[in-house]
Image 1 (spheres, rainbow, N blue to C red):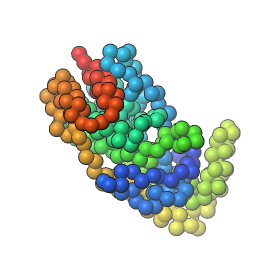
Image 2: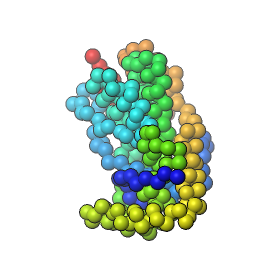
Image 3: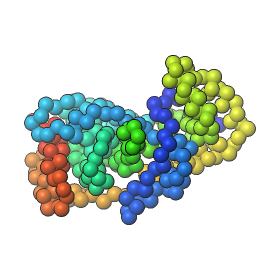
Image 4: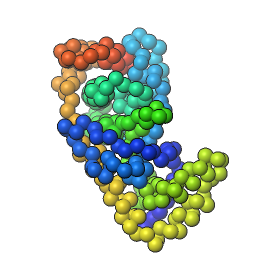
Length: 289
């Protein structure tokens, strides 16, 4: 068994993962109840609101790069490495504006529509700016981002937005890789909190980490639970099927794509349609010649 220590950027959450769109898909029961830090890894996100608030014609900005997981990052880097800045920025803007969204939204429905629009915008980029092989890799990564996006929660006390992500495994790590800090968070929350506090106070936290690591060989049940939990998270994200009201969008040109999506929006009973129109217009402006 290989046990590694990795850096991290989240603190243990206290809320339970809410039931999300129960009519269409299920989050495993163990991911819904109990102390969240015992079960899943949550990334807290603090990204500018600018991306989803800018309308067409507004000054464009460079979207923050999204990492997500090692395999998502590797896939996006692979397909975007030789694309021009306009395409790269459009991809990360879609993620920031429609998927990993920070701040309050009016309803779950509003967020569902944003994700669906984001997937369609990603499909446009794949159709018009990538070859078939690139498009397959790209959409595989973007579907994973959309699945992570569906786990969005906002802490009512702090206002911080967070998303469930699989426990990080570096590219090339062996199959029995164990992230020791994540294992500590699941198996010994009190020790993990001390570890967090040490880091927050400016110390390296290595003493707490080593002390915990020495206990691991005597507790194989910790490893079993760690693997079981991460398997549940992975299976949920991989098997998530999402309807998309923009599935029939026309990707033949940016203008045709815009009009087809806007036509679908106008035919819906959604409130605040202008919000989605602005989102679409901004996406178009990013790829305009």
